Amino acid sequence: MSITLLPLVLCDPVVSSSANEDFPDFDTSADWETWFEKLRVESPQPHWWDGPDDHPERDWFLRWCRASEGPGAVIAEFRRFQDTDVRAIVPSVRVPTLVIIDSTPPAGAQTGPAGGRFIAERMPAARLVDVTVEDSLAWPHWYGRADGIIRGTNKFLGELQKEEAELDRVLATILFTDIVDSTATAARLGDREWRAVVEEHHAIVRSLLARYRGTEVDTAGDGFFATFDGPARAIRCAQSVVEAVKPLGLEVRAGVHTGEVETISGKVGGIAVNITARVSAEAGPSEVLASQTVRDLVAGSALAFEPRGVFALKGVPDEWALYALKSG
Image 1: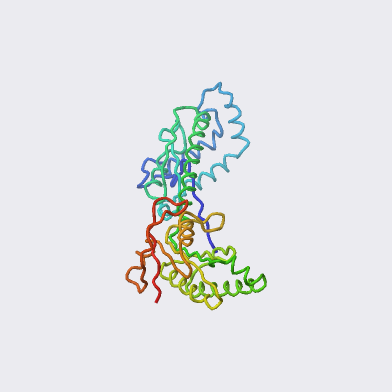
Image 2: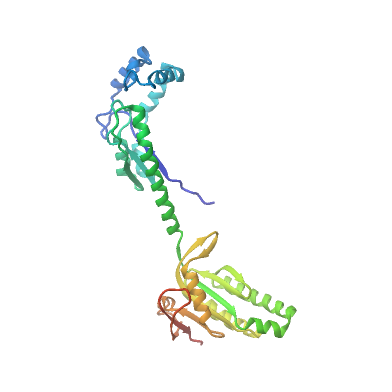
């Protein structure tokens, strides 16, 4: 079972609400109790509103406070905040995290930048963004921040998507095989006999892929596209395929290249796949042709190659030195 780790976006996070060695200026237990007593007596009073008295949202805000919770419920909720302290677990969070702070919060704001900076310094995968807005009114202040929060979050998620696409790329050795003169052979044998030969060819190739730990990606007509986690196994598999299908009266050509591949709509793709297909197309009957990358990676093994020349591969930048596997 695979587990997807989702990113976090934290706005003005609070890791602790009471005074301690990391936040010595926070409220003490005595400060909290003083505030709770004031809450019991005054809840809610007009001085809770930080904006001007004639602001159109003032009366709505106070009605909303009265209708939402009674003083006892508010105190119970804030006692939970008072006792919450997550400092110890912050370093253990390792998912990509965006921490959004406002370095100049409005007067009376219950949260500030201290918690966000604490997290950004101690959480391994966190990045910090400041969306400060110069506004002393509570509600306009939040409206002003919204644009920065949205833009910062969109940028963060966009960068993650790009990064994930790059991380999906893996190094693999790619093998393409193809039956030489398959059309002429099919015409000579007839449809029924040709179908039987192709089925036997496919069975042989698949058994050899299993032996050399290759992964079949696709089968197009009479050719195979497979990947390996090492170039030597890909070369030996190609060599074995060439020899194993000869008793069927067939010759195959094979091309091998090592490069980064990516998953596109559930299929392996990328420039390395295109290069391998072009390498295979340059191979002769019963020949295994490899890129210089493959030849260099298997240096020191029992595999030997001879140069076939430098080729301009169709649709692929630059020129490519190709090497044929020596038989024997």
